[in-house]
Length: 262
Image (cartoon, rainbow, N blue to C red; front, side, top):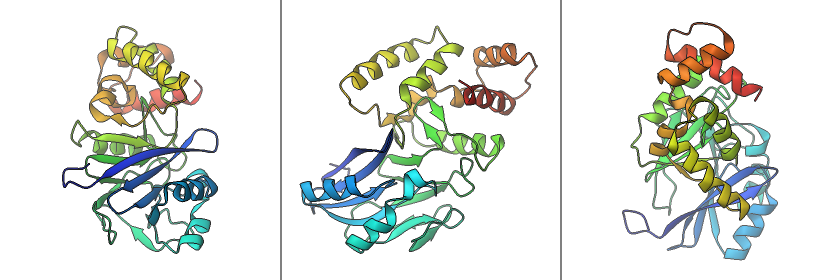
């Protein structure tokens, strides 16, 4: 139940190899929003089993594993598709930019659009009711690859996310947490928050449970890409690449390069 008394639940629907399609459900009205449907059939089965009426599709970026199911779902259910104006997909009904509001008739939550371009040139996030759907920009204990943007773009995007309230729930779109934490442990082997989180996530994954959502306060403690001002991390990255790094942005740039080959 959200703060307005609505019966809202967010469920992870596994898809493809390691994706999550997020289902935002209003059990008071048996309706749902669909976030990043990389494929359609799991969504159709899910909606049918729970007798839910879908109201809209929200897409964070154009990559196929986040959008391939949109056309089929739109055709079946006759529902609108929301995506970035810069990163638009076919079929899109509403093209969004920074600070636009997503207000869906008969759904109790509205979402603010955040421009977090870097992974793709038009990557957006949807933020509302204490939840952030951030696609492939911020991962649990990690961040996305730089396919279309620069290190500076991603650094700014992560700073923007980090400015949200610490209790924000982070709904990213891939189950990468354990691998990311293993990478984070390289830089801060004495960080007990990372050690404890590895134990927790390992237990969840053994039971085939999602490690998500994360919480922003936890990310600030365990995600090296949000901790590039840490002297410990700076020293590790400088040592690995044998170069002096003068700013957190430079640390981030080379940390991302390191992760690319991890």
